[in-house]
Length: 267
Ligand SMILES: [Zn+2]
Image 1 (cartoon, protein in one colour):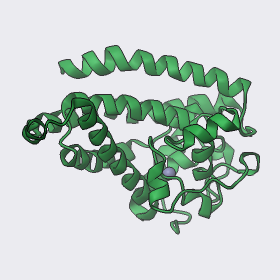
Image 2 (cartoon, helix red, strand yellow):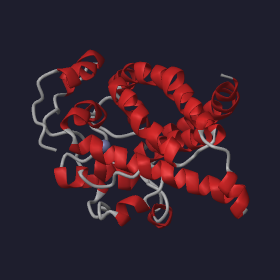
Image 3 (cartoon, helix red, strand yellow):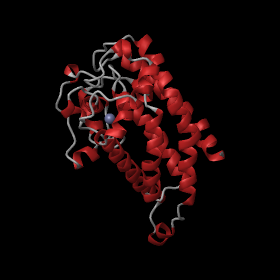
Image 4 (cartoon, helix red, strand yellow):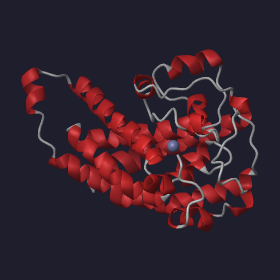
């Protein structure tokens, strides 16, 4: 598909790779949280888990989202109401981002979905590599939720791809272990999800896990009273209480978790 190659493969992918490298370097120079696991083990584990999810993103998810967007009606109302394109883009991104907030919440509330999403949460450290540690089953499930919001937002194909770029960049950023000056962190957090905010979501403490679900814009959590900014980052223990055996965390084991008897589904 021409548009995906032009906008995502050729334009977004190099920017996202460069952004990853910058965050990766920064998070090892200025650590927000202490790390507990050897990086040389976590990098290949997260990379192998990511391969099927990434293949599905590029070969199934993006083509389907673009196909759905191409079915959306032309902006008759926009032209009648003279809505500027930039405002239309903002409204579209907000609707799609709200959809991702809701999708993330239900991934924690519905036991079947949690089986897949917990693979992402089992990482015992949180950094840019965790941003890729998603089970391919979660990617398949997200097609329905995100597809619905592409239709509700009446998004164009270009908007779908630009939102995806922002989504991927935001996911890398808020999973990173970069320590920023507190004034900058607080300022950014008024609008977007920061590493500190998302770190709380990855805590083993269930009250903390059940907070801070937003993906790009942070205000969805404030609106829904799921915002939590209290815990000190250095005291946060990352992971899922029932899955803390580091030697067990092979890619094969992680990819098989959703299909095994669950240790605890009381999320
Ligand atoms: Zn989560």
